[in-house]
Length: 438
Image 1 (tube, helix red, strand yellow):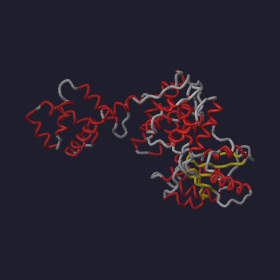
Image 2: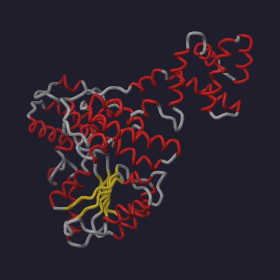
Image 3: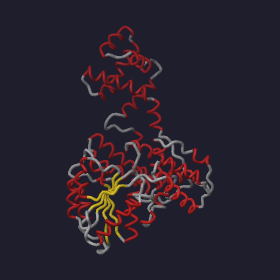
């Protein structure tokens, strides 16, 4: 399996952590206080933008000095019961061998401050007071008011974006180890477009270096500007090429995309990325389970089910794979999203019409769209004498009238069916036939 360079070249020693040397020094000194039995604070909060080495520092320190790092993603454990069961228990006992040293790493601690928080913050605060082992929390933005209680208990260590020189140096080291001939100006461009995010720079380098030993200025042109689609492609690389659950879950870091949309990207790209039939069948089975959780979450408004869906659709797809891919396979734009974009204007008009029908007839928007709109559309498209009265009663605009005349006129049945199905797929709790068969 193709290994992500972000994991392959993750620092194994503290000295290998790139940049933020003052912050690294502060963390090491805090850990030395723990080893002496007199820590100034029982917890440390490492904060700053993504891709600057916060988590890597903790893992490197643990590996170098013989600590067992227990990783917990705080966004998955927002309630008090789960926080106590997972973090609280780990903070009180040694590891399985009975004598190994331990660090508890609580990643994405700012995710615990969401609206669904049900005692997670207060539980974490109590755990910090009672812990017998170092607790390290990691966050991109720790300034949410809900995090104030644990900020007061923790040693705050800020990490800043990495400078271009540091990123270029690290990229050059990776190229030397991979046997890739590359000019420093090209590495400098990669560093500039990463905006201080070493992880993004390394992923870009791996993308353009796939199957090559020499890189030129033309190779970097395929990356284009850093945009939303490019970030999605990076997320997909994490999902399909990761070797660990933590590596796969990193797909969601820094991507301004809701998990269900990312699920669609993963589902559509799975056949090309997983060529082995047995492994593809297993991946699709896992994605089907994730889809069930998304459906229940939307229908019942039970957002806590997200903590089951995300691991399934990320790590559940990559970790079980045994057969390495034959070279780098391009990612494709999902057909469902392409169709939705194509018919975006029609769907907006249809939604506006449905809302007006819903208001006048005292129906839900879903029933108005599915049950009443076809009849009203047919009447408007066929009956010239009553069109004006119906349009006036429902307060349809000229654009909406023209849409109904065209959509429900003779010979337009297939177009209506397509738009209707796409409209229904947007209703809360409704899933497409394709997603159900995942």
